[in-house]
Image (cartoon, rainbow, N blue to C red):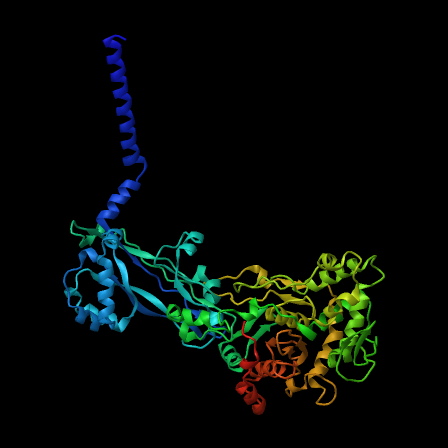
Length: 613
C-alpha cells in the first residue's frame, strides 16, 4: 500500500471519528437534556412542598380525619459544623444519645459517600411546637433544617380498621406506583387507601441555587420555576360517626364484625371489625406496628370484608326464596320435624318445636328439617336431568344474591367467599356419586359455604328491598368527588320480587311474636320499630358456635339493614341479635330503651372463648 493511500485512509478515519464525536455532542447538548438536568441538579436544591391530605367527613358533616402540621428534621452532613448537641436536644425534644448516634452514622465513609451533598431525614414527624423552638436558634446549626408535612388527626373515634392508616412508601410500593418518590406518604389501608387518588393532593417544590460549598443560595429563576402544592380533595363518606362509635362499644371485648347498610342506597353506615386498631395508633402507626402485628387476635385483619365464615341459618332465607322461584315449595307447604331431618341412618338435628310447619313458621322458628326438604327438592328437581344440573341452577341463583364473589365495594381487600360448584363434589365423590343428602348441610348454611359479614349485610338489604341491592359502598358523591355509576345501579336476584313478601312475615314474627311463641329472636324486639330478623348459629369446629343475626327495620320502607357475626357467641339470640337490634334502635330512635340489655352487651367479654387466629 502506497503512502498516499495510507494518508487518505487516516484522514477518512479522523473525519469519521470527528463526525461521531460531533454527533454525540449535538445529541447530548441539543437532543438529550438529561446531562444538562444532572448538571443543574448538582448546582440546585429541590425542596419538596408536601400537600395537605384531604379531610374525611362522615355522612352528617362530622370530621373523621383531619390534619396537623409536623416537621421532618433534615440533616445535610457535608454542611454540618461543630454544634451544641445539648441545645439541639433540648430544642427538638430528643435524647442527646440519639443525635450522637445519628451523626456517628453519617460520618462513616461508606455512608458519607452515599449521601454526598444531599439532605437526609434525621428525625421524622417532629411536633410543630418543638420545631418552632429550633427555628428560634436555627442560625446556630448550619446543615440542619426542617420540612413541613402534615400528620393525620382523629377528632372522632370511628375505628382504625375503617379509616386506615397513612405511611411512607417503600420500594415495593414505588415499583407499583411510579408516580410516588421516596419520602412520599400514601394511604395503605381502609378509607385512606380507597380514596388515595383523591386525598393525596399534588406536591409542589421550591428550587434554589447551590454554591460550591453546598450552601443554599438564591431562588432559581427568581422563584418563577417554583410550584405550589395542591391540597387533596375532601371526602364525604357514607359512615355515620355516632353509629360507628356505638357499634365499636358494643363489640368491645368480642371477636367478629358488625355491618350496617342503608338498603335504599347501598351506603355503608357502619363497618366494625373487632378487635381493631384504635385511632390513637393510626397517626404514628410505625411506633405501634410491631405490637399490632404481634397481637394474636390480628387487629389489622378486617373481619367485616376479609373473614370467610359459614352463614349458618340466615342462609335458609336464600334457600326458601329459591324454592319459591323454582316452584318446589309454596307458602302453604308443610313439612314435619321430629327433632331434625332424618335420612338413612343419619339425622341433621333441630331444636324442639311444634310440627308440621309452613314456610312462614319455618322462618320464624328456624326449622332445620324444613329447609332440608326444600334443598332436597331443589337439587333433585325432576325438571333437571341430573343432580349436578339441579345443583348448578341452585348455585347460579345463590350467586345472584352476591355470594361467592366480590360484591365490588369500594373498600379494599374484599373477599369473595365461596359457593362450591358441582365439579367440586365430582372430584370428591365422582360424577353421579353424590346427591342432595350428600351435601345436605348446605341447606342450613353450613358445609363448604363461606361468606363475609358484608355479604350477610347485603343479603339483608336485598330482602329489605324485596329483591335487589345496590353495591355496598363507603364514599358519597360530593362537590369534589363523583362516585362511579355502578354504585347507583340496581342488581336484581333471579328470584321474582313477588316472592320476598312471603319470606318477610316470617322474619317479622321471629322478632315480634313475643317470648315463648317460638320466635327465635324475640330478644331483638323494640316497640314501634317493626324489626324483621333471622337468627343463625354457625357451627365451629374450633370451639363454641358462632352467633349470627341479620335484621332490617322498619318493615316497610326500611332505613337500615344489619349483620352481626360474633365468633364463639353461641346461639344467634345470645349475642348477635341483641347487638344488632341495639344498633338499629340507636340509629332509628337516637336513644336506647333497653338499658339492661345494653349494659349486658357492653360488659360482655368473649375474648377468652375465642381461639386466637
